[in-house]
Structure formats: C-alpha cells, structure tokens
Amino acid sequence: MQKLIDTLKSFGIEIPEDKQADVKKALSEHYKNAKEVAKTLSKVEGERDDWKERAETAEETLKGFDGIDPANVKTELATWKQKAADAEKEFNAKIYERDFDDALKTALENVNFSSPAAKRSVTADIKSAGLKLKDGKILGLNDLLEQMKQDEPDTFVDESQRQAQQQQARFATARIGHQQTPGSMTKKDIEAIKDPSERQAAIAQNIQLFQ
Image (cartoon, rainbow, N blue to C red):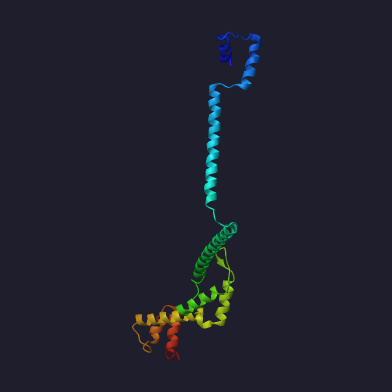
C-alpha cells in the first residue's frame, strides 16, 4: 500500500503522515496488489478445474446407467452378493472336508483292518456319520470305532489274533532256520529253542514227544 501512496504523491496528492495508516487500512480492504490477485485467481481456477473434473466423472458414471431400470440394478447387485456368499461358503466347506480327511487318516493309522476294502468301508461310514471336527480332532470317533468293532468284528483284526498269527509266523521262520519239517523235530531240538514263545509253540506242535 506504501507504493500506492507514493504513486498518489507523484500526482501531487500527498497524504499526511498521521493519516497514512488509516489510508493504508482502508485501501487494503478494497484493493489487492498484483501478486495477491494472481494467487487468488490461481486458487479459484484450481477449484474450478477440480469441480469440473468431478462433474465430468459424475456425468460419465450416469451415462453408464442410461436405459437401466434401477430395480434391475438392485436385483443384479443382490444376485452378485449371493454368488460371493455362496463361493465363500463352498470354499470353507472344502477346507473343512480336507482337514477332516487329514484328521481321520491320522486317527486310523493305528487301527488294524481285515482288508483294504474293509478300511475303505469304515472310512466311508465315519464320513457319513456326521461327526464334527474341532481343534484337529474328530469328536466321538473312538466311541464310533468301538461300536463298529462290536457290530462288525470281521472288519477289524483282533489284537490277540494278530499276535497269535505273528507268533506262528515266527515259529515257522524258526523251523526253517533249524531246517526241520513238521514232525521231524526232536525233544532236544525243541528244548534248545531260546525264545519261550517259540519253544511253547514247538512243544504244542510236537506234544507227543513230551507225553
């Protein structure tokens, strides 16, 4: 504003010093210098361009809805939401099924079945029984297996029977090792067998030698 006062002075209009402050204040309320005008103009133009861009974007968006019934848009949106929910539900079901199968496979590792077919049958029955998986464990599985063993004993290998079969197999191997055939062992041969279970089995096979 001082520059404006000096300009007035050059034209013969001199403002008294005690009035210059009041004049500067009055002029500042009504006039701006070139820099202030340019700054204000730049801000206004920026805001104008921003709103223009927003208006153009809104206009393009609205064009995309030309000829579309709002009710149809709402219906289509609901359809896609349902598809997304169904997809997530299917995904979670597959993950649960995979985890259930892994837990069941681990749980049946120590169960002795009479045949591979018997194992497949039991596995299918367990899956259809509606048992639930929680924290990596199948709830109620042990109780169901015990019930199956009572209802279908031929499906499983009895532990005592399995041990007897293993004992017979060991005895047969021992006899082969002694190069003996059934009925050809002597009492001395049998007494020389170190393994108690094999010796008892040999005695049973040749009981006539001990009568």
